[in-house]
Length: 145
Image 1 (cartoon, rainbow, N blue to C red):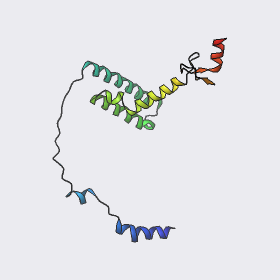
Image 2: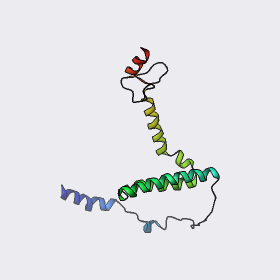
Image 3: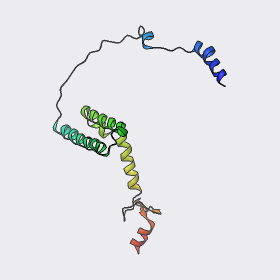
Image 4: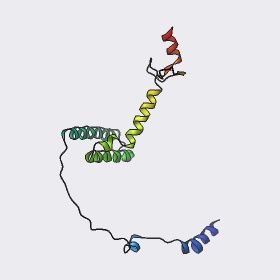
């Protein structure tokens, strides 16, 4: 077990595997010089309104974490809030058409496909008539009679 793994590592793998580092490959990689350009662009009214609403939502969520004392437990969510703000600065479509929003809209559409058209709750014993709107079997029977 252990002896075989150590032997494999020292006698076989160390001889055939190469570890490449940045210093060892620096001669092969020729990068252009880095140039930094700072721009100050202004939002148009639509972008300003969108960013401001997103900022207020993010601030509300952040304050909720602070008040509940779970700030350190939610650092990944806070990072996500900051990323969304940064994306909104670049272009609102980066937030609106992001994968996360797409998945949440798909989940909402899926919920709508399972909602009874009469009682507006999750359809139990779902019935799909020709119009393809879901109904609870009991709701549909009560409605017909």
